[in-house]
Image 1 (cartoon, helix red, strand yellow):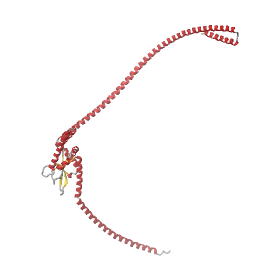
Image 2 (cartoon, helix red, strand yellow; image 1 turned 135 degrees about the vertical axis):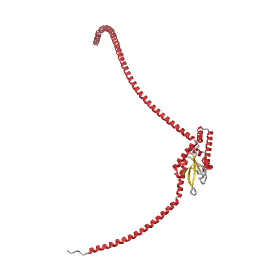
Image 3 (cartoon, helix red, strand yellow; image 1 turned 90 degrees about the vertical axis):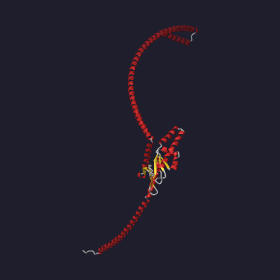
Image 4 (cartoon, helix red, strand yellow; image 1 turned 180 degrees about the vertical axis):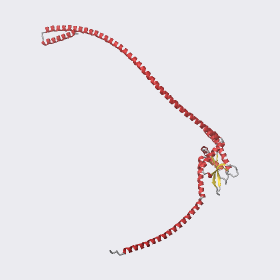
Length: 387
């Protein structure tokens, strides 16, 4: 490296000398000699510089190769050491992670087990409660089914259906009429031995009581056949069931007219009570109301129409009661008129007496007042007493 520096310095000196010579402008031969010497020296210097540079490069290359080898060995050794440390750290970290994971897994398993047990317990409790409600509902449904069966059994008997209709009819009568406006189990036709369930007392022309027969009929079997036929949708069965029910109602109306109607002991018509609105509605739709009324003088009534009919009769009873007691009202008004006349006469007598007393009182007051005023004037007229 030092030789390279020396050569470079020589080259600089030669160039400087060459520059000086050029500036002095010597003769050409000498200058050429100097230039040739300088070129030779410069060539030798370049060759020496090139050799030194090559040698330096080779030395640097050798040094770099050695350094690189040492660095490589050091790096490899460091990498091996780092690898061992890393593997050791990874092993320790893996062990710590495994330990932590086991602890976390144990805690999670414990919490999951606790939560699962609580959830299962709550679910079983809810299911048990719901099953209890279901069992309770099944028990109620069983009881309801038994009640429905009992009701169906009750309604299946003609006598029990009749009792049910009579009970419903009696409740309507009791709610609207008073106890003296209807009777139960009445023999509307004398000496016939036929007793109607209920009869309303109606006023006759001569003040006697006549009866309006009311009988409850409940052809449940025929009506159920019609409902079943309508549910099936079979037109032929529906028409057959309708004819059967209409025939049954016609027979019941005829029975009422034959047993319980006989004017003048009864009204000219009777009432057949049907306990259900559905049965009554079918009778209305089929036109049997007008037909039975014209044929047997028997009117058909359902629960709602029965109540309306009784309310109308109640208003009629009140009108008749007012007409019946109108004479008593006029008599009472006459007595009141007589009393008013007597009261007027007494008041006139009292007024006359009061007028006489008022006149006497006025005369007395005026007379006495004048006397007293005269006395006062006399006192004022007396002479004064001398000292």
